[in-house]
Amino acid sequence: MPSDPTFSSPGLDAAAALFEWYAAMGVDVTLADAPLDRFEESAKAKAAAEGQAARRQLPPTEARRPMPAAEFASQGAPARPPVAAGPTAQVPTEATVMQARVAAQSAKTLDELKALIQAFDGCNLKLTAKNTVFADGNPASKLMLVGEAPGRDEDIAGLPFVGRSGQLLDRMLNAIGYSRKQNAYIANVIYWRPPGNRDPSDVEVAICRPFILRQIELIDPTLIIFLGAQPAKALLGGEAVKQGINKLRGRWCDLEIGSKRFKALPTFHPAYLLRTPIKKREAWRDFLTAKVFLENGGMLPPT
Ligand code: URA
Image (cartoon, rainbow, N blue to C red; front, side, top):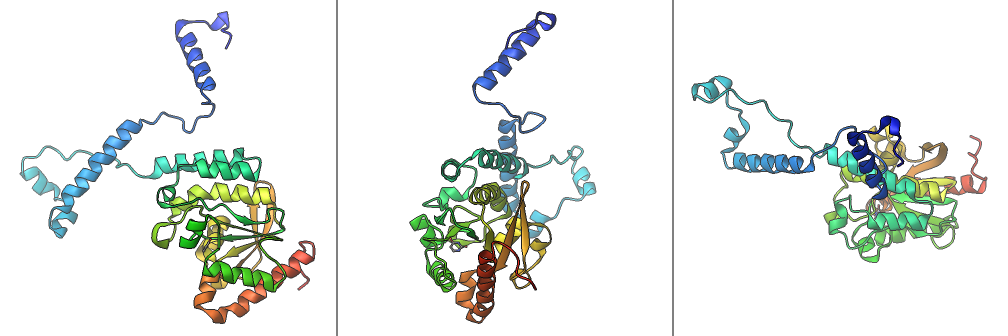
């Protein structure tokens, strides 16, 4: 940075040199208005964890009961110190979501996005998963299906929907003349198997969300089918979050990403259909609706 003699001073020169060094190192955005002392944060987290462990040693009622102020004072203790705001997952999580957003937005192609997700270390699920499960199917498809998260078989294969529910999904697609090899593209909201197939946490969903939204943008499908309530809730937000799949399924939704609006249709998850075959009739209706929509050039059929 050339220094302007009008503003030249040792302090400004040092600041200019520091910014120049940051830029050369690739630090060209700020994530917050004030610096965060991560060392202090982890020291506080350690102290809080040690405090919790010590409290767990007490009998349960003692552990939960705060000592009344009078008793506290009568023991000659100094005034109770103000309770420090304990470290929460909030700050690192927001920073991680921001990191995911910046990474996802930087992907110009699906290959780039896949490589970025594979290299991303901000989601704890990656630590226990065998593989990153990105997608399967034809990326040129007009139909995209979005599930929840990989299970055991998907984790091993590194591909979505390859287990029993995936086989049912393939049969459902074939029944309307579609297939993942030819004209359907399949992905999940979550890219790594949650241990023991537990539900992904809100934090895990928030971290993966920018990536799946970017994946949808890059595929640019005419129609998205959400498999189950979880992907619908995770991606639509708003009112959808309060509703169960029985309310959501078969109802047209709009998913807005940037300036683009995608048509989406939630239906039952194939794993649910395996457990509740009576619901297959409604899922079949949803798939037929999807077929008509796609063959009608992405227009809603007249009601
Ligand atoms: N269930 C999902 O939601 N996704 C998969 O990939 C497999 C099972």
